[in-house]
Image (cartoon, rainbow, N blue to C red; front, side, top):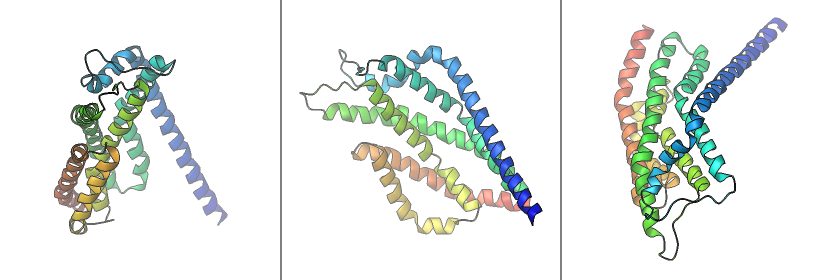
Length: 248
């Protein structure tokens, strides 16, 4: 009995050590990327600020209220940018940590999951930057009273951009999450199809929570999320067949 307890305790400690090592490796990768891109911090922020600069009057620009905001904000942007660049490595570390608890045929799906998760996350970021943000900022600029100057602060702008873009990146992971639920047996394609109306409502609620209170912005996130959900339903049987073949 004592031997079994010791074995379980050692196994738990080994998992903690492995988790620590993966976190340290991930932080090192992020730090290395940050060191390389920090000299271009201002250029990165100018690029990120482009969606709102395009909707401001020619004689207007974003402002810095805080004393150290002109330095601190591009610094933060560079750090977040480094994390975004490291996403493929971070996802691989997460999936590889989970791998020992999976069956052999399930471990073989790690690479496709990492690739698809990375692709969808970046797709969400790109979609938010080139499609959603121009619509949102144009809407905000046009509804401002004429007695109010629409001159956003760089720090608040950065916070808004990061929250919404990250939310889109995560929201675009819907196909992966749906496939995992179906393949693992938590739910089935038939059950999900029966609950399709609730999924549609949920997509629009998600859009309402992540975007300003206008129907255009909400639709811009709700429609892609729902379409990605439908794609996951279509390809789920294919993954289940591959799983069965590998088990056999």
